[in-house]
Amino acid sequence: MQKRASRRLSRGIINRTFTSAQEVTDLIEQQGADPDVEPLLRKGTGRCGYPLLSYSIDNASGYTMPSIWMADDETCPVALPLWSSLQLESDIITALIDGGADINAPEGYMQDKRRPLRVAIAAGNEAAVDLLLERGEEIGEEIDGAMVLMLPVMVTEHAFVRPSRDYEQKLLAIYERLRIFANETDDDGRNVLHHAGYRGVVAYGADVRGEDFDQHTPLAAAASHISPCVAESLCRRLSAADINRSRRHLPPPFQSAASWLPDPATPPTRIAEWQKRTTMVLLRAGADITCLPTATEEDRRQRNLVLAEYTTVLNELPNATMSAINGALAPQRDHCFSPAIAWKIGAFLHEPSAAPAAIDQYLIGDTQLRRRVKAAVGHFVKSAATQTSSNREVVGGTRYEQQGDKRVKVTVPPLQCFAIRAAGSEGQVVGLREVVHKARLDEVAKYQLTGVQKGFNEHLGDQDCQFDWQQLGYIDKDGVFQLLLTEPEEDDGDASEGGGDDGADERDGDDGDGEGEDDGGAMDGDDL
Image 1: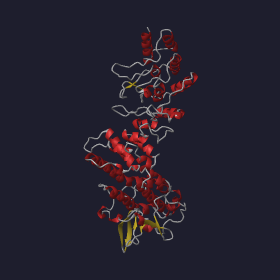
Image 2: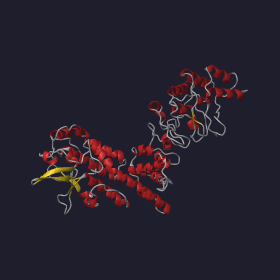
Image 3: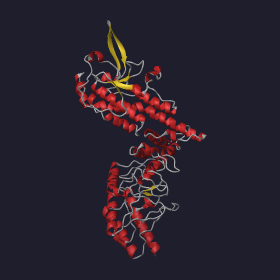
Image 4: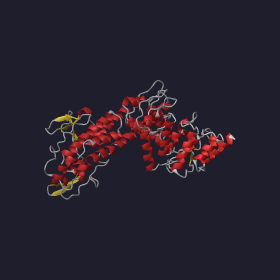
């Protein structure tokens, strides 16, 4: 009789056929139904049954996000019917708890994902979360918070599932409420960020440097389980030493990520793209390429794959740099509706901190490359905003000049605000594109890279970028050479010091058909 009653209780909850909580109470109290039974949804499912308390929780995402799964490996989500009202759902949950259902069940295999609180969170069901917490307090049952802040699974075997904005807001509200559980650990000593490497989430307040019992860190988990978004979020919170640290018998996270890189001959897949993105994130964060072993042929093959990805990072740097500059100068450009004077007034509107901050978004780690590029970009933005007479002087292009009785079209490079101090180079000036390429060339030399594209003045090769970094600087307003610091310069905010020489009309051409800008007056990768 008890077994039959438990089966009726299970079917009534899974199929949502109960119309009142009293039916649940009667089956438990009068017929001995087990409120902690864990029915499987079909034969052959494996060991992954859920307790009835979990089955009783409605999915509030419209099933854009699963909360119940058919199989052990989370590849077959299940959409259960919904209760006829929120009140009935609340009454059923209450009846199960009053009948003895364990709020923290189940124990054992894949317990974390099957617990009622985890199911309620995945379902975006705020009312169920609140009810479970309240009833736990009332009956003196402490909620097991281990892994409750893990992000619900968003990937099936075949496709990504995009949750609704409403669901995301519900999830964030729940996480804010449960942030006290951020550093709870599982039986292996892992906190939510270790599991974020498997799921792709950074939760509130978790220890980004925490180690499990095997000394794995969250970054190591993200790297070995191919989670580029998690890896990037963690790298923004970690030092270079944390990123490159190896522990006991474990390799650095970067080595784990590199071991997953696909062979170029392999057909492109979503997983292969994740593998490449994870490695590129770590490279942008300053992962140490020299930590990679080279003892075997396979080691050397993997290292060459990493070098190819680093080449891609360097080739994308000019566009990231131009985007940073355009963002910093955009306010000044937006207000330049008339020549010369408007540009000078607009100098007060530029955002000097925006460009270095944008570089930080691309080059995540505190590396020599990032410091050099940030210093160069910071000086360029300040010079462009305060030491020029027009945007065209910043971006270069073509203009007409009077030569005798003829007007001749000439090409003008972008602003050249850097100077080289070296024997035989008196008076040599270069622009930002030469400086950034020099920073890239140093990386090329360090790792013997091939394939880094210059992108400008190709006919000169690298001849126009041959100088030592210690020789690079600029001429200040007093005509004195100053070395370019590898940290952002102090900005005195005095836009009135510059403004360029008079004669802007001669520089720009009075016919207005100079080239080099796009419609918004911005620079692009070719300008760099």
